[in-house]
Image (cartoon, rainbow, N blue to C red; front, side, top):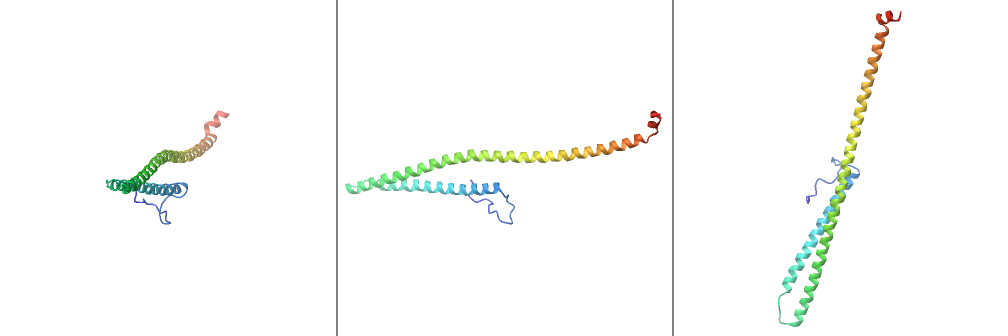
Length: 157
């Protein structure tokens, strides 16, 4: 994952692609940033809560303080579970994104190949038209040569 932000911006002087692909790339970059922020927040939450549980886990003699600490440990453990659940949902979302972006990439490749084949078809059609014109011109020249030749005149008589 690229945390540097890439070459985005899409300024008027840039040579970034325009249209749906540029919008999709911008959306993907924005989604990547939000996912990275979620990962960092969830991991920070897990680490902070675990640290607090370890700090609170000291054994003290006072029963009231022990019950408060037990409650704090339960609360911190609950927050850790929530953060871990959020990370699991994030992993699932990343898997889905990878699958669907694979399809989008495949579609882009198919569209690119279609364009290449269309260009090749146009090129082939132009070549065939030029060959047809050359053949037509050659046939006219041969016809005029044949009809003006002395052998044709002797064969027809």
